[in-house]
Image (cartoon, rainbow, N blue to C red; front, side, top):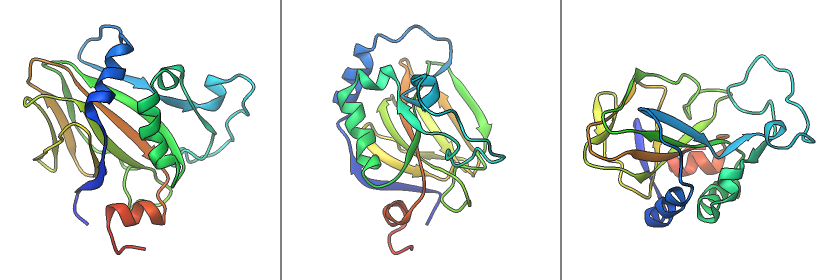
Length: 189
C-alpha cells in the first residue's frame, strides 16, 4: 500500500456542491472547518457524556451524532451513510480553503491505517480548482471532485489554494476494520 489510494467509490460532486451552496455558509478568512458530525453530547443534551480516557485518537470516547448542518443535506448524509454501513464513523467535516490560503506542512500521527487505535480519514473533494493542490510527501495528489481517497496523513502533507475560488473537501474519519482495510489495500486482512 502506498501513501495514497483512490478508492473505488465515486460520489456526485455536483449534488454535494449544490447542498454546500444551499447552506449559505458565512464568509471566512483563509481556512474554515464546518463539523457535520460532533460528539453526541454537544448535539443532544440528553446524550450520554463522554467516557474518561487517556486516548482520544480513535474516537471511541464518545458517541457521535449528525449536526444540524448535515441534517440539512440529504445527499451528504447518504455519502456518510455509505461508510456507516460498514464501520463506525466518527468526525465528519467540510474543510474550506480560501483563494490564497495555505495549510502548512504537518503530519497527523493518529490518522493512518497502520497506526494502532487510530481512525482513518478519507477525503472526498467537492469544490476545487487547478490552483488548489494537496501535497503528500512533496507530490501533488490529483483530487478530482467526487472521488474518494485514502491519504496516509501520518506522512508530511500540506495544502495550497493558488486558484480564484475556494476549495471544499469532505473529510470522513472512521474506525479501521477488515472492510476498510480491504478497500484501501485489497488482499490485506
